[in-house]
Amino acid sequence: MKFGARILKTGIAISLALFIAQLCHSPSPSLAGISAVFAIQPSIYRSYLTILERAQGNVIGAIIAIIFGLYIGHGFVLVGVAAIICVALLIHLKLENTIALAVVTLVIIMESPGTNFLEIALIRFGTIILGLLAAFIVNLIFIPPKYEVTLFQLIYSTNTEIMKWIKLNLRHAADFPLLKKDMEWMQREINQTRNLYQLYQEERTFLKRNAVSKGRKIAVYRQMILCSQKAYELLKILHRYENDYLQLPLEKQEIIRQQVDYLTDKHEQLLLAYIDKVAINVDYVEDHIAQDPKELMDLFLHEMKQLDDEGIDEYHLMRIIASTFAYQETVDYLEKLIHSFKIRHKDENQIDISVTDVN
Figure 1 (cartoon, rainbow, N blue to C red):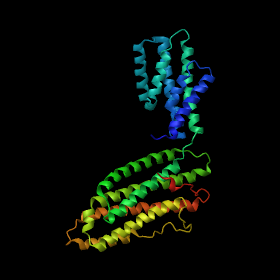
Figure 2 (figure 1 turned 135 degrees about the vertical axis):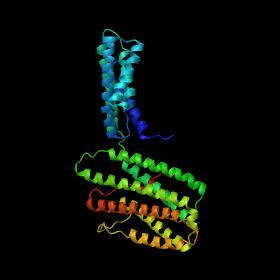
Figure 3 (figure 1 turned 60 degrees about the vertical axis):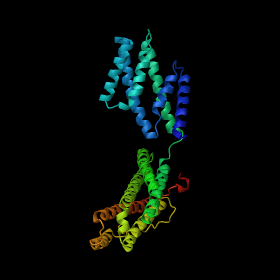
């Protein structure tokens, strides 16, 4: 079982909500603990949005419950009718995420009949809001997430696996069953990097001078993920059309292998350069790339013209070439972004991330 920070924060939020509710002498402190569970989120920004949404949903649920309690009744059938109205209204207002807690609020308030109904209803509503605020405080203070570190380490570990299999496949050393299993894992990891990227993108900077640097980092990580995806697609194509690749003359196989090796090595060096594990030349001119794609394409087209009498499927070979160039374009652009970031943000470009901690 994986014991993460969110599990710990949930427990802390419940305890804090119960403590504050008892401190305020609430007659139903457990309501604060229940509402705190609904408000724990993986990031501070999402927690802030959740508080706003849940508060709106709770207000709507409380108003409907009070109206029914004061003017219509508390019967179990009426509770169901009130819940239907509440859910329909929340869906109409596009507050679907608040339905669960809003309905809980409605039921709790309507289940408090008596001469002091309004007072009890307001106390219970306030207790629920108290739980939401306690969860937000926990998200804000305890164990703040470090999504940048996790994101980079996941990107690096995924890329390392992809590059390893690309090189093995080009050298006819891949274990097909194991590769197929690992490819499923790679796609899941890439999807996970996208989820982490979204969380990192949502993190807000408190200082205006850091906003530009954060924006460039977001662009760099977005390109890193795109490079991972293109590398994965190249691996899939190489695996799918391996027989066509093996039918090529050895010297033509060597041309493709050298180019792909160059790209994978360059890709890895760029990732290490971003975290300052490899020296980077700050005088780098961004519009100069080591390999000219047009020259390489002309070379490939020239080689393909000689394949007519060799019984090789030109379409399959072109798929390999196209995937190689798609990968090259993304890596070249990543190079520009990283060099630009390192040159223009010298005070913020020291990235304290270690790849040795990657699992």
